[in-house]
Length: 510
Image 1 (cartoon, rainbow, N blue to C red):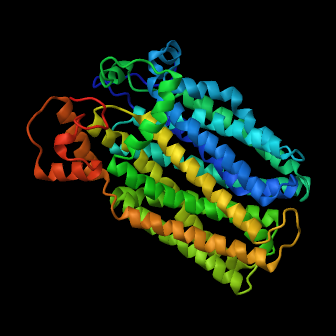
Image 2 (cartoon, helix red, strand yellow; image 1 turned 30 degrees about the vertical axis):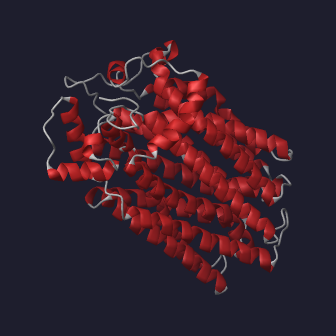
């Protein structure tokens, strides 16, 4: 199928134009936008308008994410091998999934129909999570497919996160705007929000399909071991476990995951408790919570540009540390103000919102900026390109830990005396919310900060890595310089003599 991707240059590398960056970035309206809506509102929607207990809402989240987490690595593995099939050759091994997901994206809207039972919400949530994985996992490989150098991949990551933050702003403010139009007790607020976002998701996925491309089939085939066959369902299931543990044997990826989970799970805990905290501890309303969330996301949007600058000029790890500290300051300040009697209508409440947003925006950007280089580190270890495996495993780990975090928060809320549908909560329930919001968020952030001090991937070390890959591809057998050896061994976690396929991770000997 014809696309609007530019033709390759004489060097064989297609030039990346503004429209390609924009089309790629816009798809995170689905990737991050849907998650912003869900993390900010779905638990509140279930407990306020659907009659579910907090633990039931958390259980839906847990079951859906676990099933999705199991499916995600399988999708990643199949997309790695889809190019051997007729559909893959015609539409692309990654882009086929993006095209197929478009007519299934209305599954997001039907999640937000009020007045249904537990099983309805469980089934509709599971359905959307599977459609989401089907589209997002191939999407996450495309920056590595379309760009090779550090700066190009950084631009893809920056564009993506800017769109993500813009969609998060809409997810924050939109419920408040709809409440003003429909009334504060109308559950249709969330249904109309779901319909609007569904339309945006379908538009973004269509643009991504039209203005993206993949590595040439010949290049992918050259990196495939001789005798490799197209995958069966059984091999895909086996790859779930094989890829999970083999990607963990790449040191940079392990550290990247630690930073990623530290930044994102801390936000999961915060998001799960924040709306309830505003409504019941700060004497606010859905409209106030919507305004605070929207403003926080606006600050996050600005923070992405700052984080991009610091990550390129200093290092991703330094930018991460500053971001985590800012987020922690916001959380502590919010609790201090609440304890001092400040409520949601007081102007001081915007101070912690500013610090939290500044940190969260950078924490959202940095892991995805560094993720685009994980397949490069893996290539020097295995001699292969496994973007799909890394995308699948990363999603698997993220969904498993996120589901555990949210289920843990809702379970603790229930133990703390939270009553679904109540207009007022007990002091015990409110104190429990404060403890979850404070200790839970900051403890996870601290773990991410500790990991970041060991993460050494930056523009300079990535340049060394890519130059060494090119040298090995050319068959140069001269030993590397001591500096190159040290950098590559630190990033990979393997002795230099074990690289380029001479290790169990590769599965073959070169």
